[in-house]
Image (cartoon, rainbow, N blue to C red; front, side):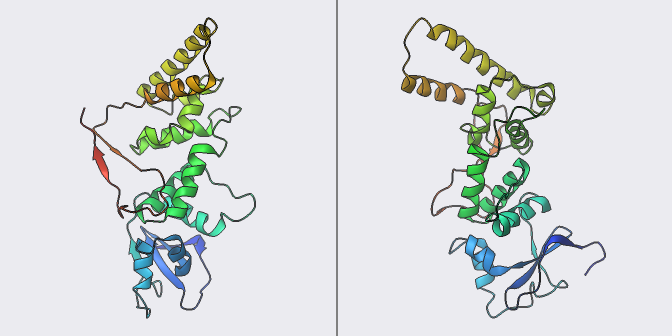
Length: 255
């Protein structure tokens, strides 16, 4: 093993005959069980093809001197979050930070693992204390800041984090304002002011709940325009993930 390469403290797992494979991400080694990644993968997915085509076992990944070298999108931390979901998500009290869920979804999307992708998507859009307001920075704002940092399509979060920041009672805190771009902050404040104004106007007319919900959904979509010429677009989870590529598709938006 090279001097600058280290074993991950949590996921350099005990040896399991015919199942343990060593994977290298950047300067970190993971010893993982190939059947766990095959189970998470599609029948023609990346890990399924990688490991099923190695039977009988080849030298690749058999020991630290010959690891399987992967170059996933994201970082070592993202791959580790992905492994946490695979190995630990069934445990009571399992939790990840918004950054970890985002990283896990990033890896799952890239390597065609629909179950992990869907689980991460569900947590990022409908759970994980996204509306928590007692802390100086809510999870919702942390998630939006991470999405901006990675150039992700804000529309992916409109039914979760984005909507919660717009609709919550508390204004964005000073710390939250410093985490997101001036453009996004301006659009959020505009949307909040619009909803307040609409509430005042509603006193003078009858608006059904169904109509109000449709109007609000359309209004939320109105803040999703960005000046970027290229953003990463992730589709919502599909049962079979057909047509998904191993690497991200960068979609150019012409204005």
